[in-house]
Length: 481
Ligand code: NAD
Image 1 (cartoon, rainbow, N blue to C red):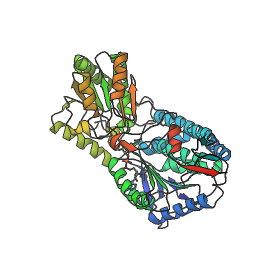
Image 2 (image 1 turned 180 degrees about the vertical axis):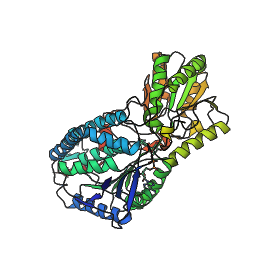
Image 3 (image 1 turned 90 degrees about the vertical axis):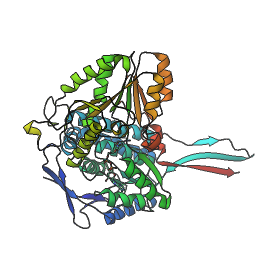
Image 4 (image 1 turned 120 degrees about the vertical axis):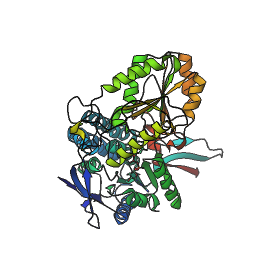
């Protein structure tokens, strides 16, 4: 059994209350770890440590090249531990170890990308309108950052936040999801080994309503970065208003995948699968809303059904398994609830719609790949984020109709479409109002490109140059000679 404390001000500590939480393996419901269960008081300790490290510790005076060196070192340690980290992530989340290995490859690259940017910004001289004066702009770290991450991509999402914040010169208090803390604890150990000074990286474990709420409300925190659901994002925005802290939000998505009748059908079917079934559909950019033009609708559904029937469920550690369980019993009930709603609303169930009957999977939180056709824009299965292995298919006739429907959602994270027509590529990519638009692909992201949402899918951008800028303030220095 793994037993883990929290990391505050350079030391490993239990929760002040002594409380512990059991961590569950989604594959079979067994207990895999016991970790400290922090509360507001522990978050307050961590915030104070981060504040000291930012205001008076060695961190503010640490040159950018040294911050970069520490981040490069952390990336090397992630590489060294890659296989163990991947296995730990799969144990904690249920996703296949193949997918977890991809995450770990990305994570090392994310730390290297931001390490590389850390010492590149020399500021900017701007034209002053007054004679014999000079004006320049410098970027400075925002300060103490609270960072709250979700359970679906625990370490990947944590690294999206940790790497740019540390590169910019901020200090951080990170709070992983209470149900998937293990890899965030492990990377904190690696950050300690890399040599980050005490108080620069703090990791507090515990429930969102306690630890997360304190990070959002506390006036000593300068920025709160959150990835999770819309409802929680709104709560955090309200809490952050107390000291007008900066807010960065990566919220959910309901991401249309539009297949026009001139598309390469095989490729579109392939990617429709990739679009949804990573981590059993528990991905914010899942292309779970598939829209198919009338001329190819029936052929597309037939091919997709055949492919979905072949998806192999099981332990993420077993050879040949393509899809693991959902994260928890509670989340399984939510996904099953959406399937019931879809049937009541008149969607046609083509495949799945139930738990698998394999006796070996009964203790895990498994759900079958599920396909609905005959879906319409007003259905909840089309408008709301299911976060599971469920695809809704809608039929459409014209390009205008497809674009208008795709945009008619509160979400605006990502969208994709399939066509061979270059004019349509230009038109539709501009007309879709989403933070990322893929043409003839789906679910592709990389650290060089910013990631974030239009509408209620979020505020600000992570990754790319813009991801670093989120963690900086801009100062104008004006000098009269
Ligand atoms: P969630 O909103 O329930 O929880 C996310 C985090 O917020 C957890 O660490 C939780 O403890 C914390 N939290 C809960 N209540 C809080 C509160 N009152 N104050 C502060 N923190 C609180 O989300 P989840 O179920 O863990 O994750 C799934 C959601 O995350 C989905 O909606 C998904 O789309 C979204 N997501 C978005 C992206 C993106 O890049 N846009 C990436 C991954 C996941």
